[in-house]
Image 1 (cartoon, helix red, strand yellow):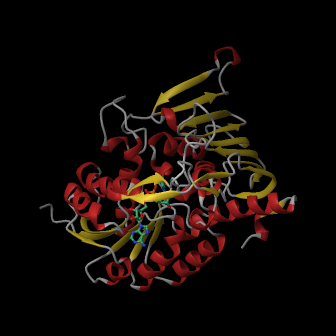
Image 2 (cartoon, helix red, strand yellow):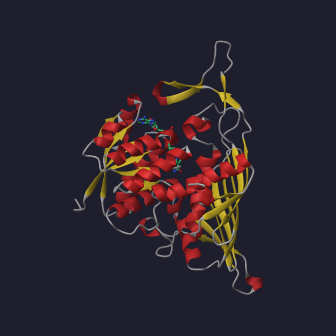
Length: 398
Ligand SMILES: NC(=O)c1ccc[n+]([C@@H]2O[C@H](COP(=O)([O-])OP(=O)(O)OC[C@H]3O[C@@H](n4cnc5c(N)ncnc54)[C@H](O)[C@@H]3O)[C@@H](O)[C@H]2O)c1
């Protein structure tokens, strides 16, 4: 072995993010040379029928379905939460009460009150906390931040943030993402939260006020779902063949206008109904000296406009963010233009978490509960702006 200290991970969840995180903890060690060796110690989920094969596939050493017991176990060092949003508070609380480091999926919580409590618990605890705003760890996004910090685009005047998907037509039943009691919100907390975090990260500026907001739920009711064997779901169909319909309690789309502390004006847009856009999470930032533009569907690329040269030769250039040593994280991956994908941001972030836990500098600053609470305050301010139809200062939301 390499003599590095090990850290035992206890992961909650075995589905979408459970897979992404199992892979991240495994590959961080293989590729990113972290100062600690993550050990896939225990995986916890509700469905033991699917959990056993999952743990064997990924090499988890133990399985359980009691997250509180796992948090209390003296063998666990870090609790990684990938359960649905309404469980983030209870699970993080159990982990922090046992003095464990916590890495929780985004958004910090579905409900603002839960997020506020999580930030307060983290403030009182000595244990480190992290929130998986993984787009920070995309090389192109981290490079955009670097360009802003190097003053390559000058003073920021305009920001456009967008996160567009198109998977939620009438045929999709009432998954937890459409149930406000579980998710807290729809496209707002699910998608826009990522873009808000990305804008805060790249610009290094906080959003100070929300000047206008619009939410829309296009599909008002969806088929009730029933769990089926193997952990899958099916529409709950009655004897007559018609699915039982239940109300949707979250937004399908959100738009809002805002300002950054440096005076820039910003627009944000998130939707699950943008036909033809599948994971179009991105931003465009226009400054006095240049601009940057990114969208995750072309995640290796950052577009950059340098307005400092002769006007006749100016134009957008596309930078492949895969060149060592210029581009953050590229030293861990493949030769120029051999590309990285969705899973790499999680792996990069897992390695950054391990650097922080070992007292080293991460490549990108890691969002902790306090930082993710700032994003949550923006989400809340947007909701208040829509409900009250007035400008909401972020200073009003605490
Ligand atoms: N960072 C990202 O890009 C990203 C992408 C997708 C989802 N997410 C976030 O990840 C979280 C999970 O999303 P998902 O799509 O993986 O959901 P999912 O429904 O696919 O998986 C949720 C998992 O949580 C487990 N779980 C729920 N309650 C539990 C309990 N009481 N005890 C043990 N296990 C429990 C379930 O067994 C399941 O395995 C959400 O907060 C979501 O917002 C983040």
